[in-house]
Structures are given as structure tokens and as C-alpha cells.
Length: 116
Image (spheres, rainbow, N blue to C red):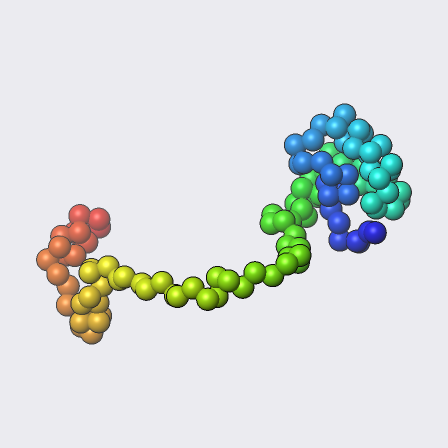
């Protein structure tokens, strides 16, 4: 029925941009639905109506939605062949360039002079 980790916005089912009127309307609807306890719903409304507590609720709201379990599992993507990776030709001689780090090209020297 209720989780202690539920954010006030989730308890009332309102977005972070909800006005006080929307919060009050959602409060009444949440009390009818009884998805959370009346105490949790009342605390959620109280915290969202108070500007200081609302900032805390904004901060504590998870950025990503909760991931729910899938109802059915589809593993057909595992049967498809793995795509090949085509490397850019600029990386073909990367090992040779890294071997001698003291070698500085003329372009690098000019760039260093121009920047510094």
C-alpha cells in the first residue's frame, strides 16, 4: 500500500510545477483512492504547501523514474548477431603516436604558441 520512501509529489500524483490549487485537488483525490495512508497524504500536502518544505521535496525527488519489473520477458534480441564496430581511420596509427610522446608536430607547436 505505502512505501516510506515515497516523495510528496508521488503521494499526491502532482508534477513539481503544480500550483497550490492543484495540490489541494490532488489531496482530495488521493484521500479517495487510498493508495497511501491518510497520514502520508496529509504530510505530503502539508510539505508541498509550505515553500521551505517544498524545496526539500524538490531536492529529494528522484531524477529518474522507478524501474518496475516487466510483466513478460522478451529475449528475442539476444538471438540477433552483435553489430560490428567500424573504427574511424584517424585512430589507425594511434599506437605509433602514443609510443613517442616527446615528439611534437609543427601544428601542435603553432597551436601551443597561439594559445599561450
